[in-house]
Length: 340
Image (cartoon, rainbow, N blue to C red):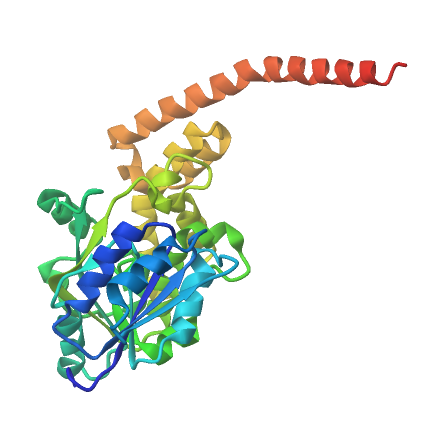
């Protein structure tokens, strides 16, 4: 199976040619060689395409397409899934990269557990230069429940996606399932910023069985340009969108504990975001209705966030008179412009 199974590596990119080359090289270095690398380029110019042509012109495994006009992340990935011709699909983003044995290790799980539809492993965390941070990697995987105790078939496949155990990339799944689920936020644009998470949840909810391999298979690079980093303190933060998605999700009773566990991690982050963005009342309501996320008042973090909420409300009150004055002044100016 390791030899005959064709794997489509789907690789979306946007204006990061140097990082993309490192990612492509990690794909070409796979010990499982029966692959295609399907690239969707949203870059505003042809530099990335020319660089790929110079470096990899004679490698038939690379299938490159520049999107004109650009599709955006969700539609770009969706188009890659549609173009993929392999039996299995793996997603990797252009600033991340695979370990050489990633596909071989993941693909081996189908021989051990023939009924599975998806497999994934641990991720390294690296800085912008690609230097791996071992301590941060350990913390990240523990936070997402990727531990030795969790290895093997997951008892509830849907739980794997809900608690974000399923990673944003570096996973391997049956192409038929991936194509059926599709990618993106559907008609709800507020979830677009967390489309990796939305896809992971939907895929795991639909999968018959999911397997976790307690080995590192990919590397997640933290850069200032990533969506999660660029928006993390704004009203458009991915964590806020993920919380809204989880709140709205219809789940069977056996998965409600998974939702609660996921919200336990997300709620304090969202309360902090709401306070930072002067949405004090929303932040207070969320904190008080999800006190379990603060150990029912035993967490110091709760009182710090209440202080943030108080400061947010105070700043809002202070800015209100100034805003009214500014609006009045604008009204006067508009009136004056109408006088001949």
